[in-house]
Image 1 (cartoon, rainbow, N blue to C red):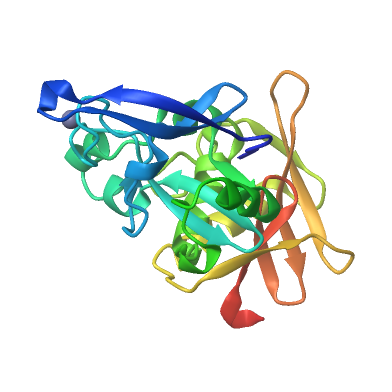
Image 2 (cartoon, rainbow, N blue to C red; image 1 turned 30 degrees about the vertical axis):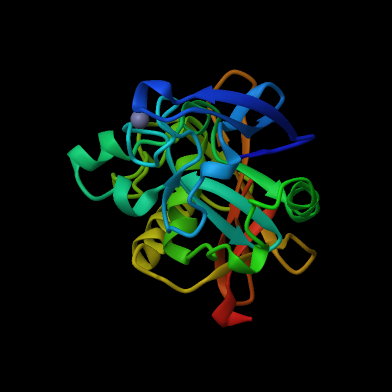
Length: 246
Ligand SMILES: [Zn+2]
């Protein structure tokens, strides 16, 4: 995952004349020269899954294939995830609903709450946080899988099952036991629609890192154990917690 830092809204003109419309002036969202949204005013924010990069010949959501995402709130972050529901539906759907290049190659971006609220003051098209759908446990598991380094647990629509032989050590216990615990947790929660939030790791959790046999001997802070069992970790610092257990 990567944090959207110093996002910038730029005005641009799209020429829709080839589709019988006129030129329109719209706003585009950039972060470090990555274009995240190409027409903020044309995004259909109310739907479960949508395109943040719409067809530049007509502006209609769904005209072109690919670049589908879901906007999700997992307190205190707002995530731009792949459109997991459609993307995992079938092979054909996977081509139609593939995520934008910046998710495929760099991972899932997210806004800190303050960053997002600041953007809303600059463009009223962004929905209020209370109108953004909350991340479900199922989606959180798929996000964890998507973000695992070197795709060691594969990626949706494949099940969360360890691939390869890169994990060679764990900070606590046997790596094979931690791997099995992750697979079992994912399997038990892959249909779990409960909403989740993200908690900072504290002193009451024991973080377990997995070590990968990669250049630099990568340390991956993968899971935490607390009084009520295993929790998956996102971005090394956020623990996924079902809101029903709070
Ligand atoms: Zn079009």
